[in-house]
Image 1: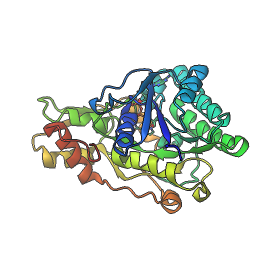
Image 2 (image 1 turned 90 degrees about the vertical axis):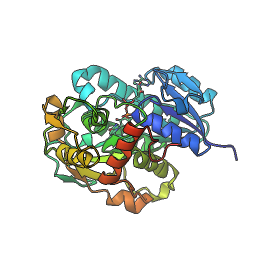
Image 3 (image 1 turned 30 degrees about the horizontal axis):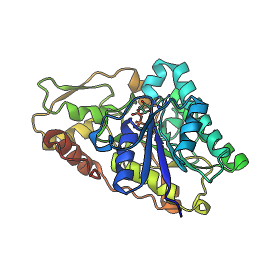
Length: 320
Ligand SMILES: NC(=O)c1ccc[n+]([C@@H]2O[C@H](COP(=O)([O-])OP(=O)(O)OC[C@H]3O[C@@H](n4cnc5c(N)ncnc54)[C@H](O)[C@@H]3O)[C@@H](O)[C@H]2O)c1
């Protein structure tokens, strides 16, 4: 049987970089696609195609050229940048997804797609611990695009037989690439301020609890759901998953255990308004039951890994 060929669209971003490294380490065939080239040295030897996911014909041509049968579609406008440029965000998030779904629907060989949704599908009326079937009335352009994206995936699954799989990611924290303009970016950026003379200024309020996840668990979730049997999938839309919940204050206190002179302050901006509409945590029992979702990194381990990576240039947990 021919080896699977994975393509990562949005491969130069925060999640794409980590996913590319993991697939490479597992000996998989991987093609990177993005509008900007990758920067992380560990993946520069992988084939790269500069492509705009909104260019349907160009994308279809490159996917056929490389005989891709697994698409990880990660290119998206994130929550904070999306609020600043709603038309751009909507166009990228919707057109990009529809192009990928159409390519899969018309493919001559079976194709499998991973497309991440987000906790942003929930809104101020959702409960503090959002259930799988929680009421969803998102308050951001990004959240609306993810919510509608989930419905498009369900439509293509039902009506065009497309095998598309999805999870609702919480805030993702890793070391290999900078974050791309989300509301949880503070939990990544703070690790670049450990040795600063000035206190780190956090753009969320001290007590704003949000669900979070280390990149190793995020990549593991994507690869696990992609290899799960289709019959096991009960969920029509995207699966809730999370690893931990914490507030900025809880994160910074944990960091101070490793960096005793670390100091911080708060200057909440418009991103606090976005975060306030998101749940504190997610009920992810369905993902655990259906495809064995099981996170491994908790808050102390996350901080230990991130501090070591930044201060001593040690690799991320799963990096090779
Ligand atoms: N990072 C998080 O905390 C988080 C949380 C929940 C969900 N997600 C989802 O995970 C996915 C990946 O997020 P990320 O944090 O890696 O984002 P990112 O912003 O770091 O990376 C996105 C990548 O897409 C590329 N891109 C932008 N426009 C493009 C286009 N027109 N064509 C091709 N590529 C284009 C960018 O150059 C960038 O490299 C997104 O779907 C996002 O919504 C991320």
